[in-house]
Image (cartoon, rainbow, N blue to C red):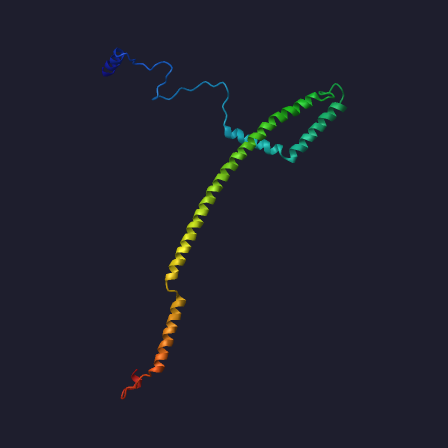
Length: 191
């Protein structure tokens, strides 16, 4: 009952209880659109174009294309006239080669664009890695400099040895200047 009361209030206030025509509700998924063109996966099409571009760029393709053209021309020159399908100006051969070229060029360009995209991503990753390496190197350089400065104030093993040797020499010199007095009546074996 509460829902109909609200709808009546909206209608009286000049509003409408229904969704206006031409607008869809946001709380419900959109209905599927009718598409006239077929849908395809761009990545699958790109991989297919790269495979074709790789094949067109090989010596194998050139050899096969040359053999087909030689056979085509030889057949249409030396075969009986009733079996020839493309006489001398070889218009059908020209059309076939033009069609092949018109499809090969965009496929090659598509493959190059995909390679450029991969190169761009790789370049960006390399640049970021180089920046991290430079930052790490600068950090380590600062840390080594701080350690060197800290070690300048710390006594090293060699410095302590030299100081101890100096003290030992000084004590020997004092012993020679002030020889020890012997205590009478003491047994030297007790020491």
